[in-house]
Image 1 (cartoon, one colour):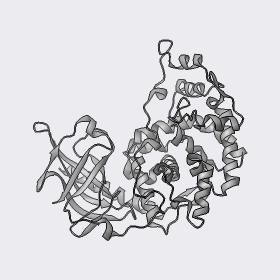
Image 2 (tube, rainbow, N blue to C red; image 1 turned 60 degrees about the vertical axis):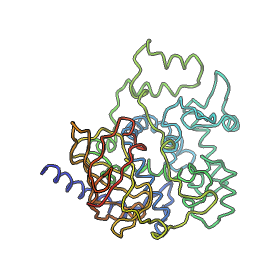
Image 3 (cartoon, one colour; image 1 turned 120 degrees about the vertical axis):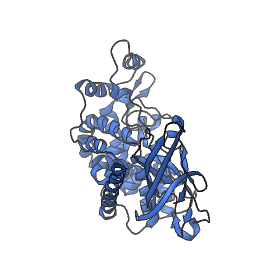
Image 4 (cartoon, rainbow, N blue to C red; image 1 turned 60 degrees about the horizontal axis):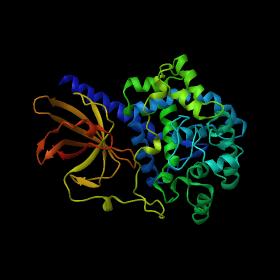
Length: 405
């Protein structure tokens, strides 16, 4: 019990320090800052950040791949006068896996569409596709990005246009000329949060210590390592996958496990950031607006959440839960995206029940810490819930109700 209490106190201290850092540090993408005077933008930012940080194993895998690829693409990006932050876009698009192909036909590290590739001077055909050539594809992507910037004038809008297309983004800019790029009312949810996701992956990979309340010490150390630990074999395998052209023969060679063991760094399962569930609070075609607490509260005495993260539960563990519907408890409004920092008090092996409590809620809009003593329940006034099955441990699967102690 003493160990659990000390763990909770330590976690609270780290949480307070990190929240202060998030509230005071300026978040910048390509030299353009996130607006500090738009609460709705900051709320979406924290929700995106919270969701991405809930996948530390994916972040560390991206870090290892990026440590090999970035030294190759950075000089090319710089030579075109493009901000280096665009190096993070392919991590959104392909998870730095060169063989990635989207449902719409985009392919390669930069996820270039076939017709776009041809217009940019790449050879795109069966058995010979230069979208898989890292150097040629990077030059083509940079030419495209420069064209977009000449057309749109804002690097944030360029990033959105890389996802949604320049014509659509330019039309939106004409309709909402005074709207900040991060608050543009794009129709597709994926486009609404695209820049936020690029900023989130940049922040978590480059400043992990500022967000240590999301991670354990090992993850912070791995993400902070500027010389990512990766074997020579894995490094060579990654670079070999970005070969000069792609043919059926080379695909077979890359996947032929009988010829030689395939390095784990190429087989590790990685969730693309764009595959992680994103918020859908914005109405299609409507600008981002601030929502008052009065419109987000209900009379229910419970808080409904879902877990962020999917590792197995252990006693004394700190677990993150995200609020999934607005409510209020003891007069305190609770909004979608707010975070509960919960502690696993006890796991009963015989009954298969787990007991969790939380004393702190962090708001998504302002990152304010609120003291709330809550317990996870299945029935009113009866703390304790059934230990989740393996499929329920997925980040979007395990949902819990919380009541005041």
